[in-house]
Length: 81
Image (cartoon, rainbow, N blue to C red; front, side, top):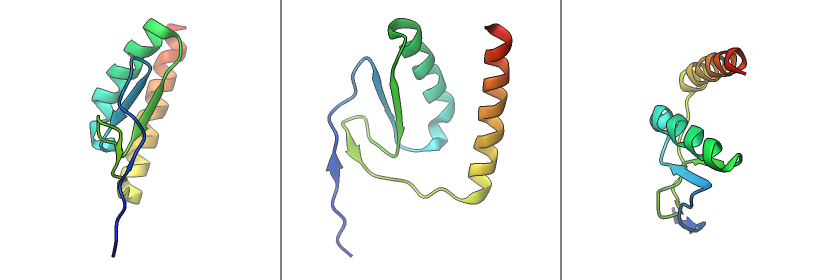
């Protein structure tokens, strides 16, 4: 199998990359900081900091766990706003 790596440029003040959803907690801190400073931003998983797309395998239990976390974050954000 031949695997081609794609590079989508480096991170910026408004674009954050994380290698996997295993870095979700760090990603949340990053995106909150970006949104506080710039009011908009982008967060990508499966990408190295230098912009190299590495992808990731996500299994069903991970998806279910992440869905619960996102719902909790949404609910807490609604309470603040």
